[in-house]
Amino acid sequence: DIVMTQSPDSLAVSLGERATINCRPSQSILSSSNNQDSLAWYQQKPGQPPKVVIYWASTRESGVPDRFSGSGSGTDFTLTISSLQAEDVAVYYCQQYYSSPLTFGGGTRVEIK
Amino acid sequence: QVQLQESGPGLVKPSQTLSLTCSVSGDSINSGGYYWTWIRQPAGKGLEWIGRIYASGITNYNPSLKSRITISIDTSRNRFSLDLSSVTAADTAVYFCSAVKEGANWFDPWGQGTLVTVSS
Image (cartoon, each protein chain N blue to C red):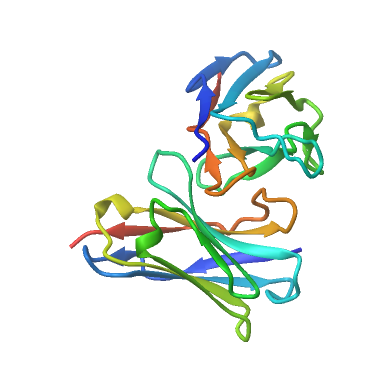
């Protein structure tokens, strides 16, 4: 199984400041079919299912604000919220879809400082 | 736009079988282009992929649960189901169903989730 290690477990950021979340797969998740990394990021608010915000490591889902960006390659990936808004308070998960079983990171809780 | 809704008992006794159904609307479950998955989340914890089924009936399960899982599909009723046998308190979780576009492999959309508690 590919283990997805997320850090930090939680972070508190002031409104308008940058939030950065890291995700490290235990092995490469580079798809040979399209040379893209098989990584998605999800946002989960209390009482709601997760919602995809980024896929292929850096492609923003339609409708997601452009303050959300994904970057990285190999075994080191980052989700950045460039200017934190109150509605961004949530738990964020990374997920690899390179191989079965599909696996998630442990989650990062983002709060307002 | 595909929409999903989970249904099933909210309380299951230990050692019994947990059975849930996911009803699909907005598209035919048999139209191709999607496969159908189950994911669970214990309270306050992370997400665990349970398994998936294609419209053809082909399944793929998480090895950690494989011996206890059956995922099936009912194309006539546009729904798919999860059976998890020999449950224990560790199986208490919110269970989500989700669709995945073939070739994509990220989960979108999701059902709202249903809480299943294992307790006597």
